[in-house]
Length: 394
Image 1 (cartoon, one colour):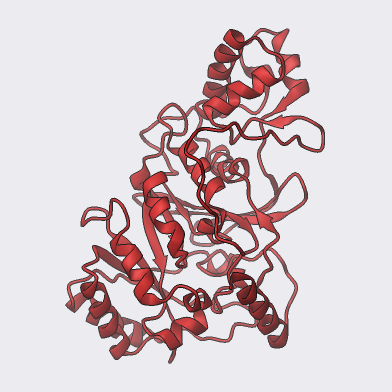
Image 2 (image 1 turned 60 degrees about the vertical axis):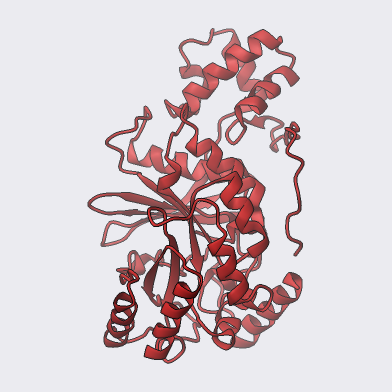
């Protein structure tokens, strides 16, 4: 799969892609594109400017999905809008709630593709785990999502739609900055966000817009398995917190469990982290490290992790993630004693290394468990798919 290349910084109107019913989805359009969509539908420019402002407020501040509720738009204009445009939400196929309060939604797009999102409530925050692809580009061997074929990238509309659907379910309209249940977003759902860079960037800009959903970039984290050429652009053009799926400190181990390492090695990845725009002690880079029994959990590997972080002078913390099992997985979770020892060594090195409490395991909503397809694959089939993905990545 090719890496997204340079984009001309001069704003260029996007093509509007009609749905099956011929209408244009307004969710996911920038303010400029929203206005352009109205002008393209033959609305006079001054009128289009006014209507775009009204629509933006109703969609992103009030959570409206119907033009008929927009009281400052005339009753004659509402049917005109209804004929040409739609304010979408993903279709909910299934909604599950874990015993620990975690919620998982199985969603379906207008073209019949399935993907998932997860909401994790805590005492001081509520975090929405958002997907960026249907399936996944990569083939991380410990991750259930990585056993899926990549079907397609999600659009900016489908990414923003996950956030808006969650706020529907949490009753968080009208939009307000204080007292929210949904306080944080992590781009850690299905897919590799940096292989869908433009849509992820456009969606997050909408989510951060002060006139709309207004979520601070400090409350948004983008996770990557290490798509090095796109990391600097993510820092410059999006500016959110960075998390890196590290999971190994040697070439041999990381090549196996995060095969993207064969393309962009550990040293290259850590240098990209050191160069990440905006990274500092107040905005540390998070390294995600899944604990796999007898694979990456030794004391020696903990010490090597500390050495690498210090070598590149990284403002960092390490999230230690107990492996979440799934049918057909070829790994086991490290023992609690081993995890504690690993964490203690990293902490002793002056680096925060909390152990993440697994959430939503009983509904397959925990880290690495998201997978909408229910079919079982043999080990040979999984290996063949991994080889196919690796060949595509180069």
